[in-house]
Image (cartoon, rainbow, N blue to C red; front, top):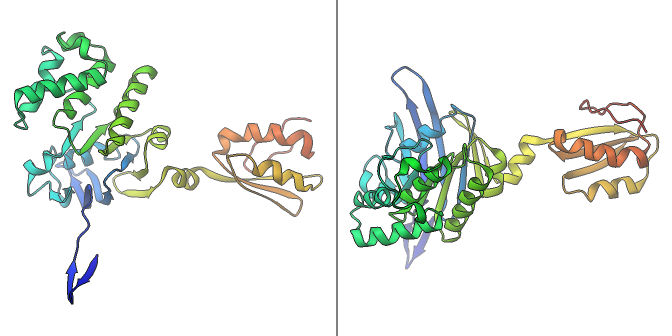
Length: 314
């Protein structure tokens, strides 16, 4: 941004919570894990990195958290280059990796307090924060038990508590609900939402579109390179919206009114005695729509919609 004050032109550079510029990573065996990723995450964002296994999600967050060296490009955290000033950048980050990486013979309280030592946090402060986050994650009653006795979901929550001890401005979670039962996954999602309301930036990696859709403001879809970046609603329409065509025996205006009232219908029009419907995810919603239409609309018995859905006999 450029502004002029008292006749002087000033260049003001907007600082992003996370800014990634042309990031590339080629491993020694020649595998290109990242092929020029560029994106930015704003303050207050709940941002998802969405892609299949092997897409490069873990490599990307490894570079952001300085665990992996980029081949080229740059990652900046709140204006600080990860490559040039690692310590300062890392002071802003909390990382929850996908794999368990703590000493399972230590107690949860020890694990969280010891993590604080890496950031120079006084022990008294570390104990206070450890109690706070272990309680929020329903682990305080396990604080003095050997960590190896915890369930899988408890261990995952312990890693989140450990990542929070430096009270990071940016929390990175790599597949945080992977392998969790529904109750444990709900607890983790609720805790993450609380952090978001506190103003922290959340960066989530997942291969689950439904989870990203429910939690996040923006989603980056990539597989070694960026494929799409948008809000969940826009991405769902872009990736899953389809047009289905039904042939009608007669045309009535109320057909359109009924269809357009449905949340999953984006448009409905009658063209040359054909009902043309654009909707989200027809594999999910076609059966509902066909059941609604077949009796009142007089669709030919046994006829197929253009996408292959057979209408049930009337």
